[in-house]
Length: 105
Picture 1 (cartoon, rainbow, N blue to C red):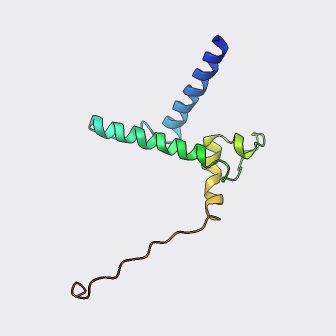
Picture 2 (cartoon, rainbow, N blue to C red):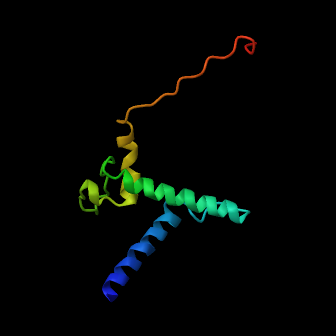
Picture 3 (cartoon, rainbow, N blue to C red):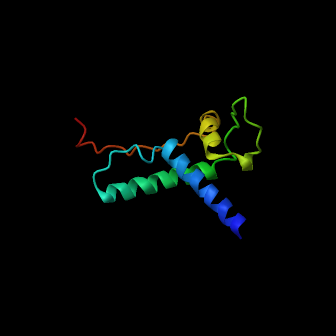
């Protein structure tokens, strides 16, 4: 029981460390509590997106890091490798609505 609690806490502390260092959770200049809540939810959503896209990201590791499978990539390694794999994704475009002829100058 103690070991499971320690491992859970260890993972939680590393999540907060990632949010603070890599995702900039504490860097924002926030003036209201509502803005702080919105910023916290935005950082949490970014962390979730990194977790969900790890299978689409390339594993760009540093020389000291061991190779990892797509399901085992950390959010930092996903963030590092996502730029190269994002170029391979299809580009979605939005059709512009035609302007009304009376509004065109």
